[in-house]
Image (cartoon, rainbow, N blue to C red; front, top):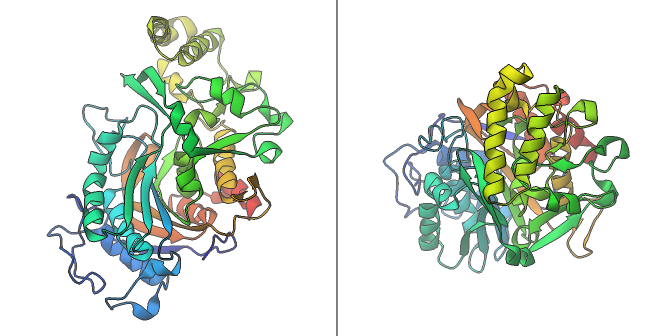
Length: 453
């Protein structure tokens, strides 16, 4: 079953708003399709919910309840390459800080959801198949800590034992990483050699960022340098960069966490594809400056406000060193002085980096990524008017515990007890937005996605 943006169906199941705490997250009930499986003594709502949602979708309905049930065999052929893309944005909730990881159930896709889907995906891909669990977290995230947090190391060990003839991989596709201290990047490194395993997809004039009356000042992203951004987005070029393993997969199963988002209003299936870009600094998150100067990075302010952000941007553009440290210190001092000199609270700076309702860039970037991925003709090497016919796609949304507030990095947990599934990311996000209490037609990331339908 190839991608069909005409399929607007969304399936939903309700489960307990909790997760099995112990990797590798075995199912807690006996299931005919896994007759020899080890069972968990701890309740596993995610495994139960994933199984229920596959059943409600009518996948391999004739064999349900037997040892032969293979629900994803409807969409995955033996020998296929299957990508599972959970949301692994950070290894700690930035609301509570690195020392106390606090709530992470609302931060990342839970490992028990990944485990359940991976079992059925590996069964369908079978001998000679490939299963890749992957993401590109933010530059300062520790991949090792993320893998431990989500229990994916234990999940992959289980998959190797249970499906020895399936090639199972757990991959961090980031091309750029960083060392952070007290929430700020102090040093960046780039793995240029890894770019050979990636493909640049150029939307050109098809990009939602290409409009002459929109572009204004240069694009940027918080705590990244601007050099790659400037080369990836010009008057004629608008590029994304995807790992070849993901771009050429036969099946992509998107596993987002349902959360609010400071820049786009919400993050779900559409936004989760940001994590298949090797370089985050290919992805415009805002236009530099305030509306007064044609930007949407932050609201209008006074001279002190603009001067402080100029210092901050200068620091972002430096990779490391004493000058970067000095500018970082100066920026912090200027923020502290803002109530006295600038006449406004230092809390106002939380609206910077595009994290406010005036951001008109981030949703465009997200929809560009989806268009570049789904409409890119892998053989012709160009973006076409119709989706690539050989790509199969499914999204399963983890909303057993959702996130609200200052997502995606600092969410507050909401016990929803829901899992959603759809073959269409726009339909999934429309349903998720409604469940979150938004009016979908007022969210630009959802409203404008329908122009690709």
